[in-house]
Image 1 (cartoon, rainbow, N blue to C red):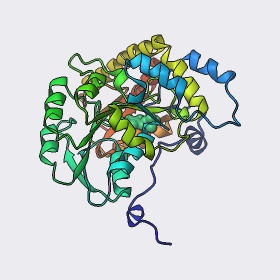
Image 2 (cartoon, rainbow, N blue to C red):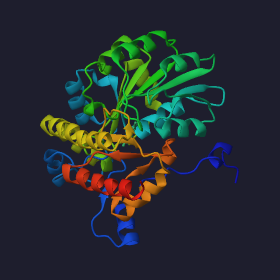
Image 3 (cartoon, rainbow, N blue to C red):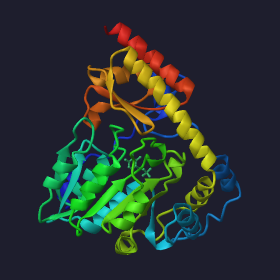
Image 4 (cartoon, rainbow, N blue to C red):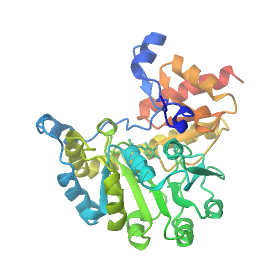
Length: 362
Ligand SMILES: *Cc1c(COP(=O)(O)O)cnc(C)c1O
């Protein structure tokens, strides 16, 4: 068969190891998964309740996601035509790439950042310009300098996955001021709800000021609904309208729409998770200081820690003890682990195992 050449160079996404497979392989009965930045506290009870008496599964979902759209528009104080929904924000990344990229277009992104920007750009055959991060942060000056005649699309991930670092308001706006208006800037804010930095920007109001900016958020992280696949984009109506034809008609499932709308109404849950996450991060910071390990200060629910040894060695050590984390090797940080912040007990568990690793490998 004559597959697109680009596909032959790609490997499928490697998900973190599944809980079941690790249980079987290592004969363990308790596994703690801290690999995919999921919420250790689950989701709001309100989201669970609505799933119990939910709609008919025989009918197609509402392709306009009317209820969720109304609730989210009110919550964010935006118009309904400033929103677009995706089957996870991964689906929005795909739509945007499909809408703007082709072999004569270039796209700019950080190195290292979320892998799906590059993956989709490769499939579209676009020219990819990766600009190295500096101290885990986007080099926005470098990204501006990479703009050329063919540039259609720039990816900015803040807070950034896998480093956890963020961009300050001043840095972001001075960057946006310099990007030509015909280039779309995607601001991926998957971890927005976890941010505590004082000099963080109000991205939604920036979409008013910059008519070439789209903000991506998700219900997969702090809202704890990763399994239901709901992400959304916020931008001026012209951007949304241009993207809509690239969206599959029924891309957001009915259970996801219902659960997300209910989850949104429970901001107490979100606040509680945000607070517990900061307390959890403090456990990791203490551990790093005590053991003189370097890490990036995080505005997210994960932390990238440098162990100064082959990351897979630490990864395997933890796996045998029932902790699944993310090796930095596939993320561009070959001596680091990316660990999701869990509950207090989960954090204690993984940190105790890591202490043991450090003692044994002195
Ligand atoms: C998790 C994550 C996503 C994907 O989220 P979904 O809505 O589950 O597809 C997108 N961007 C970043 C940076 C992420 O970490």
